[in-house]
Length: 147
Image 1 (tube, rainbow, N blue to C red):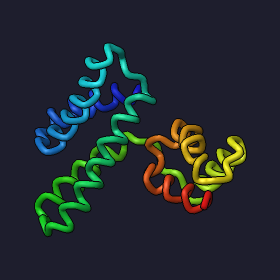
Image 2: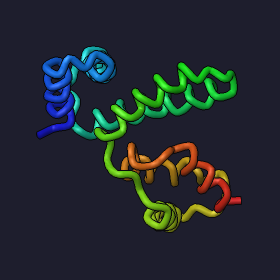
Image 3: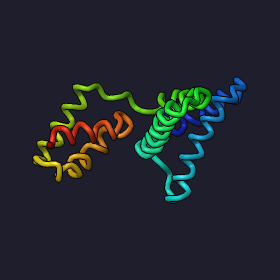
């Protein structure tokens, strides 16, 4: 079963359970997927759906940090709830050791030895870790190794 089919099935389950909060978040997810499909005139596969979900999760994490600075606990709770709905559809997060091994392999494959080579390393890593690691944290790790 594809991720998109799973999301649609979960939407039906939320409707049957009359879980309005969960249903609203799942509809947001499906709307984002549908928007991308309409914009690009394609049917998204699992990999492309993961990109959409990863972007949504990143938006929620950024919003949470901004709301924490503003002291808006009500909005933090809503964003955490939505993040909790989005997260299970993403692949399991990479462990620190796995992530370091992938970074080392990408740096060796591209021959990266200075900060100028960061784009090459990120280009090779992104398809492998999309949705499994925070890209900004990965970028910071690569930067620290290349300096």
